[in-house]
Length: 286
Image (cartoon, rainbow, N blue to C red):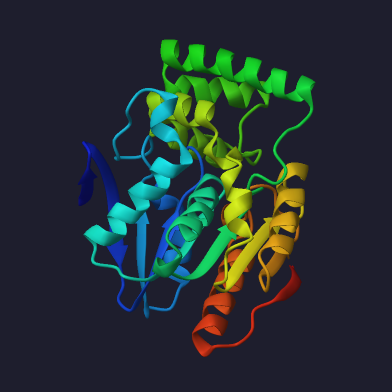
């Protein structure tokens, strides 16, 4: 697959279709294949650009949390679009990828025709309870140690056995195998670096949200974590004129758990933007 290279960081990417560009950033522990379903559902008039965020898939995975700050992930995306000769695009992402999309729109507003952010708290509702934060840090440290000693596939099996897999996994063999395969393709450096850096919690996302003027779609599953439900609602209030879609009966990663509803709300939004229609409002889908 082709790569964009800047400062010894290779970003693996894929481009399908023709027309106006739509670039999509995937969630934590996934890779560019996460977007295959949406890419297939979209009309062929879109040029869909997907890529592996550093630390994931076939992109470079340097060691150290300092290599996974949100501003670096944003600039990786910018270099990729410049590499592809893109001067403006629809920019979207889910969870970790949503933080990248939001940050990119704040840092490079002239490059963005419309913003799509899915399942993201945007820095508005990070875990605040000290006991919860301590427990999460302890769990992360134990997970890091196990992953380094046993590899990501066995780490995923351990998560499934203990019921700590995230995002949630359906209770069937095919879903468990898919999760193990997903984690096996996730580098240990990426797992540790991104997890420690927690770019989705960086506060400057809140600052750029108030400055965003482009049409914006925000989505969230009704069964997602409270911090994501609260964060997306707050993000909707801060981005004036945004469209907020609640997708029924979906936990985190709505694109995976309710693909038909998710894909349709994306298509409807893009078609409204293209037609110059107002997008503001709140919708419950499903």
